[in-house]
Image (cartoon, rainbow, N blue to C red; front, side, top):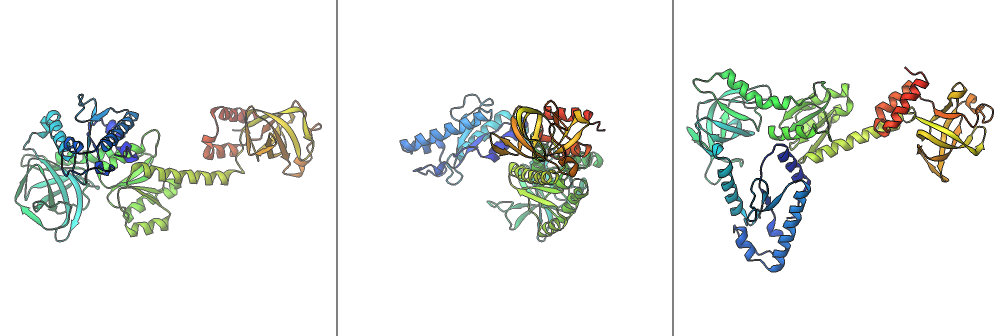
Length: 494
C-alpha cells in the first residue's frame, strides 16, 4: 500500500515495452493502522468491517498509487470501479498474509483470461512446456522443473531442450510430481508417473540436463517428427539473446538466473539511456569458467572486465579467481541496482583517469587582455582578461599566436570577484596569474614580447587533444570542441 518501488517501475517498463496487459495486486492491505482482519475475505466484505478512519486511509493510499501510475503513463482503477478493461488496468487490494482480496484476484484472473485468451486456454494434444528451473537432486542427478501447458508426456519420450552449448536431446527417465498439497520446489519425496497430462508442474529426470537453460521451451520428438527441425526450434530461444551480444567482442559479461531475466537485463542494457555493450552471457550461478570468459576484457578494455550478475549466486571459487585476476563482479536482485553499481564503478574509473591525465589535458581558450588590468608585467604575469571563447583552467599553457606562437607560461591561478576558482568560461572577466615553467618563459614580459591587442591562446598539441577525447569528452560543449578544431588548424596539428 506504500506505492511504486523502483523494481515495480522497472517491471512496468518491461510490460509496456512488450505491450503486455496486467493486473495490479496492491499488497500489504493488513498493514493499514487499525485494520480488522477478515481472513481470505473478498475486499468488499473486508472493507465493510473497517472503521471510517481506516476506509478513508485506504482510499487516500489508493488515490496516491493511481497518481503514481499516471506519472508512468498508465491509467489504473480499483477493479470493481473499472468500466474500461483493456484501456484501464485493474487494481486489486490484497494481503498475502491474511488472504483478504485473494478471492477477488483469482476471480479477476479467471474472468479476464477466459475473455481474452480463449485459444490459449483451450487444451490441445501438441506438447507445450517451459523449463522453470534446473536442479541437482540426490539419487536423480540433474533434473528440470517444467510447467506442462498442453499435451501429454510419457516416460521414455524423447525430448529436446535448449542448452548453453546447443540443443540437448535426451530421453525422459522419470516423470515426478510432489505429493498432494506439497510444493514442487521444496525438497522431499516425489510421486512417479508413467504419463502426465497438462496442465501442471512436473519434475523430469533425464541424462545430459546439466546445461539446460531455465526459461526455454520443452519439445517432444514424435514418430513422424524431424529431429533436426525440432533442434532448430529449440535453438531459436537462445538466438534472440545471442543477437544482442556486441559483435566487436568488447563489453561486459552478463549472468542471470533464467532466460527470461537474461532477456530483460539485455533489453535494459541496450536502451539509449544505458547503452552498455555485452560481450558474453551465462545462465545460472557464476562459476570459474564465467570469470575466465570475463577476464578476456582485461587485455581489450579493462573497465569491461566485469560480470553483471542478476539474481544469481557467485561460487566461492569464482569469487576467489575474480579477486586474483582483477575481474569485478556486481550482484543485485534489481536491474536498476546492478546498473547503478556498474555506473558508479565506471564513474570512479573515469575520475581516476582524469586525475592521471590532468597534467596533459589542455582545454581550449582564447583570452583578451583587459585595458588597465595589467597588475604585473613579468613572471609571474598577472592580468585581467575577458574569456572570448572556450574554458580557461588552472594549469593551461598560454601562447601568443600573433607573436610567432611564443609561450609565456601556464595559468597558475584564476580569481573571479577576488575569489580563487579552478576554471572560468566564455563571457567571464577574471584575473589570471601566468607563471613560466622554464627560464625562457620566465623572461617573457608584457609590453616587450606581447601587447594589449594580442590574444592569449591555450597551446594545444596532438597529445592534449587525444587526452581530451579519451577522458574529458563530455566535459566540453559542442562550441568548445569546435574551438579545438579551429586551434588545431591554427597550430597545424595533423
